[in-house]
Amino acid sequence: MDVIRCGWVGKDPIYQEYHDKVWGRPVYDSQELFAKLCLDGQQAGLSWLTILKKQQNYEAAFANFDPAIIATFDDDKIEELLLNPGIVRNRLKVNSIVKNAKGYMAYVEQGNDFSQFLWGFVGGEPKVNHFTSLAEMPAQSIESEAMSKALKKLGFNFVGPTICYAFMQAVGMFNDHTTDCFCYDLEGARKG
Image (cartoon, rainbow, N blue to C red; front, top):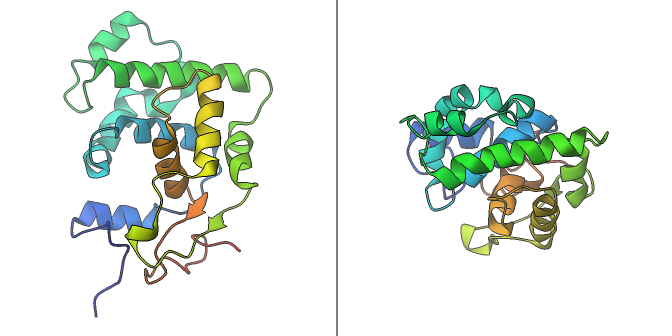
């Protein structure tokens, strides 16, 4: 018997594993949230599968998404990154990760918790939606619009409301597994 997954998954085993073990599972670690937000920004105009296949290359190129290290990247380092065939070599996108790291560091150096900040947009715990098909799923929400505005005020970019909504789905702020998907009711994927 075939496993029923969300309609966007398809047959690619990398995508299936990501859906089954990562997507929609609540993430609370600040650095992991920062990494995922940056990767979602890299997706703009591309498929998520493209970025997913390059994730390890991004981790190697960007110091495992350690914001303290990335915030120190200078013009020479950016030029080096733009020669790296393992990542998307788009100057705006590469610069966005550095810019986001600087925004992250400025925020946490004031004694703030990045995870609490992001999770605050959904009241601190996952919101469970009850979508029966992809057609019902929005591209953005009131929460993602608010998150986008707040992140931009902190100096982040490539964090529009659609990117923020995809991020919120991926890190479990919204459980947007369709109700027929085997992950919908899994412990950890659904709260509430």
